[in-house]
Amino acid sequence: MANQNKFSLPRGTADILPQEVRLWQDIEAKARSLFDLYHYQEIRTPVFEETELFARSMGATSDVVQKQMLTLQPNQREGESGQSSKIFSLRPEGTASVVRSYIENSLDRKEALTKLFYIGPMFRGERPQKGRLRQFYQIGVEAIGPNSASPYLDAEIMGLSVALLKAFGVKDHVLKINTLGSLEDKQNVSTVLREMIGDQKASLCPTCQQRLDRNVFRVLDCKNQECQKIVAGLKLGVSLLSQQSQEYYAQVKKALGLLGVSFQEVPTLVRGLDYYTQVVFEITSPSLGSQDALGAGGRYNGLVQELGGSEGVDAVGFSLGMERIILARQAVPEPQARGVDVFVAPIDDKAFESAFQIMNTLRQQGLASDMSYKTASLKSQMRLADKLSARYVCILGEDEMNQNAVTLKDMTTGSQEKISREEIVEKIKKLVLT
Ligand code: HAM
Image (tube, rainbow, N blue to C red; front, side, top):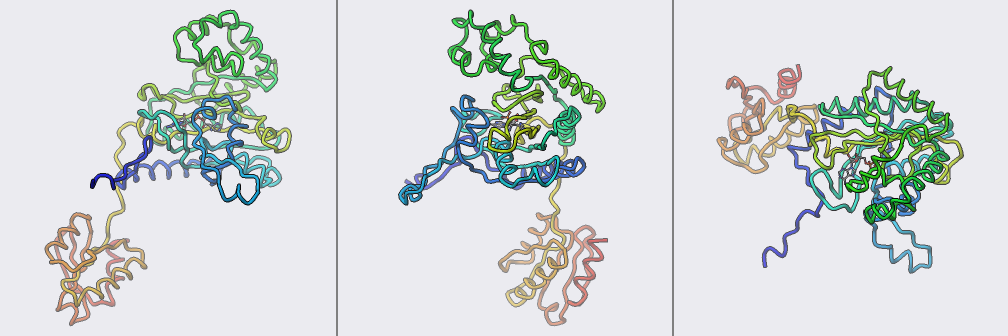
């Protein structure tokens, strides 16, 4: 009976408790300082958007849109009042939302190239397993601008994703790259692929038999052994693409060389989302098991127009999965919390209110302070101060109250001295902050 009232964590989500949160904050702080260096600015968009936005961008036939959307209950009231009621879903990724915001806020008129980053939760109704959650966090960047495609920018984006992973302490990672060519190339290649694979359709897995018509590129990265055998026999490669796309790809690789970023070319790397054109990439870690992608991205030149923006706006970006970063990073010492500078310990009820005020003043002066919020024996308060690793304890007893003073105990040396109330802040500030 009692258990019926207990709630538990939804499947595929995680509580990040204070001890672990420090690690997350550390990763976020490192990301933010690198984004400053590369001049990317933060954008925050809502965690839900119109479902149609995701279907139009990621592709109606993509696995994410077909199977993993977490769609909100339609708003009954809106429907009742006769307004058209829109369907909303929790965002499965950040790119579509950023592009929606870019168009809606006419960011193309503000600067030639808008370089944005985001850090936040994404939601996909996947079958949970190690490294695969229903709510997970991404650190992502998107660089969008009219006629902004440049192989140097593609290389910078990939270089930045690698620099981030290095800063986080993930050493064991491989950057895999490929090119899909322009939108036109993609159409041509899909026709060629259908011809190449078509007569072996019966040997493909049932999913790939459907993919053959709907999105033949996805056959290339199917995990099924039979499909992989068929793919291994295909003549893939840049020769299927236009001269221009081939040159672009060659320039990106050269620019990666200029940055000293090593990479592996993988002609079967196609990505599961429809919006990509030209260069795509994925960063994997062998230490992660089956969910080995730490992050991924690529160029998506047609998406701004597809979502109602101007023609000719080019874009490139990537996102890294934070949970996977944490799983893959080598043992790095955990960042320590700031800790308590001063623990304020009133000995009895009479001293309590003064102690409470002193604590407030200390905080206003930039000193991290804490107390036990109920009167307790000095012994138990000292135990708590010790547990909180307080550097000083400010004791208020009867004598101190009578003399308008406090006793300041240095927890490192054990020495203590009585100081007047007026001096407390200056004295402690000098000790702690210098
Ligand atoms: P994505 O490959 O779908 O791309 O996701 C990027 C990364 O997010 C993955 O490599 C993985 O680390 C993490 N991730 C994805 N799904 C899950 C999950 N269920 N649980 C844990 N981690 C997950 C995108 O989302 C694109 N928006 C990337 C992009 C940005 N392309 C251009 N700009």
